[in-house]
Image 1 (spheres, rainbow, N blue to C red):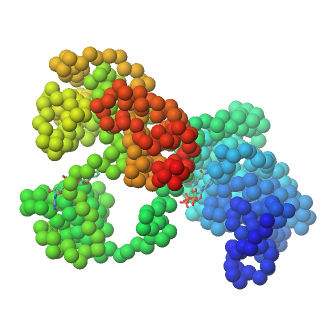
Image 2: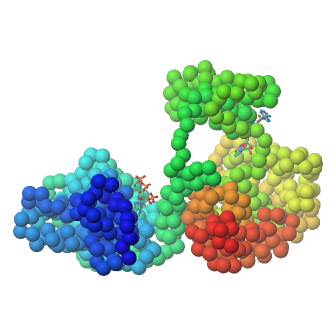
Image 3: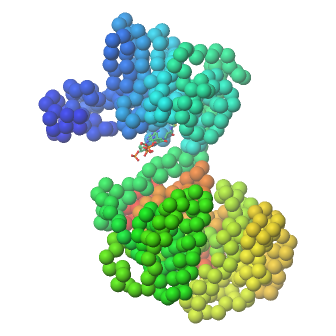
Length: 615
Ligand SMILES: CCCCCCC[C@H](O)CC(=O)SCCNC(=O)CCNC(=O)[C@H](O)C(C)(C)COP(=O)([O-])OP(=O)([O-])OC[C@H]1O[C@@H](n2cnc3c(N)ncnc32)[C@H](O)[C@@H]1OP(=O)([O-])[O-]
Ligand SMILES: NC(=O)c1ccc[n+]([C@@H]2O[C@H](COP(=O)([O-])OP(=O)(O)OC[C@H]3O[C@@H](n4cnc5c(N)ncnc54)[C@H](O)[C@@H]3O)[C@@H](O)[C@H]2O)c1
């Protein structure tokens, strides 16, 4: 099954070895150059990702698995074979372990965590290195992380470039170091440093690491004593904990989040993608609309030294916008975000106008005028906020909803957020919608345009309870502008009065109902967003949530969370709430979700169903 292939070795088309091997994992390579990575065994090709070289009396084990030299099975096999070979070779007096290209190994290959485990294991290789009678030296550059640092800790010596970074980022993947890191780092760097590095996952500069003794170019750090247990027992426990964590949903979500962040960088649009896109120079711009968004974008452009025409419909709005821009710019200078010089220059770069002719030659025009329903995060968060208010109208208290959602993992509950952003903002958005529909709402309004409406927020607004800024909103605060939220019995009275006036029978609401109604309503909207082609992949939505709303990383994001719960279950509950709340259009089940739930489609194939290519 050997096909004619193009060689990918360093020599490219000049390669004359004439022997090509198809390497399933890493494209194609020729036999016969220093780059040779493949050895043919029948149809199966073993990939060698550690180059073994002897220079003088040194054996060099150079890991060659770009881009980050992750410790895949092939790398582990290469290190294992390399250390055995170097031990046997009488000409070799010392062994150097290093990484080719940008970095020393940056850790285990995370993609292999979901596959069947294959020997040799990292600790086994590490122990071989440690037991090697010849000195084994880790030569570190780039990012020496996770399993990479564990390998370095097994070496007898560690030397590093000043720019190198070391760390145990496993915690960000819901794991702990699993190849003796928890046992060896405390012995080398002390308990406190080890605890800090393992629990924070932070990358430490080599110069700092040297102080801790992690990088040690002088002597063998053979610390035999252990803190609580003998080394072997400690290692056994570490392996057990690592395996437990690896199988946990939390770690799966964090691994998913790691790859989702990288997947979204590979964007595709109908007219191009991340590879084909070429940045065009932007020398002049115009922003239409000097409201909240427009002013913010003007400030970004001015801070980058780009001239901007600011276009508004009348002088009053134009002046308001100019005032806002001036104030944001001054604030940025004060906070040191932009230099005073950039701040001064900004005034000369900004050209207010009400004449469209001025815009005819500019390179870029962001239009920020009419209110839209939100693109992605705001659109999905709409049902989330609405359900929160409905739950309170039906029997929950704002503090109960907040507590349940904070226990779920959100950094701050939805009503605390509303107090933070301002009760008046939520009120004004509703009023704008009502105005567009030609409807006047009152405190008794229960339906707007055939949809359920809750006037509870309006009540708080009319009572001047605008949130933190007035010292009271859904909570009370120590002062206007205060930050410490405490429950307020007045709010309970307002809610009860509201329900009484409207004849609403309040009931006990369970935590499960709160989580389901808040999360499933926004997940349903998420599937509609995929269906509409607003987001290209579920990862786009999840990363928006991780960064935009500090959604807990250990749940991956709302779409991954739905996948973990099971789409069939999520779909059934959405149908249930749709039946019970027929006047809330956000419960109309997404067609895409229905299709996916019926077929149990894996997450990486969802979009094929959204685009119809799998139907
Ligand atoms: C008996 C039990 C034994 C258990 C042994 C356990 C061992 C150990 O304790 C566990 C670990 O090491 S856990 C691991 C601990 N280590 C970590 O968590 C380190 C994670 N990595 C990082 O933090 C960053 O990648 C760097 C800072 C290394 C480089 O940043 P940068 O220069 O901005 O580059 P970039 O854009 O970020 O990545 C480039 C490409 O490489 C890909 N890729 C990267 N790492 C990968 C990996 N480990 N794997 C696979 N792939 C990995 C990445 O997806 C991307 O691919 P794409 O297809 O092009 O999208
Ligand atoms: N504010 C947010 O947090 C946010 C977030 C995401 C998206 N958006 C979207 O950004 C857009 C702008 O939002 P905003 O909050 O800045 O609104 P805004 O109401 O604060 O500002 C809009 C401005 O556009 C001006 N305008 C209207 N028609 C115009 C015209 N024909 N020519 C010139 N100017 C005109 C108005 O006078 C007003 O000053 C909307 O589509 C909104 O949905 C806003």
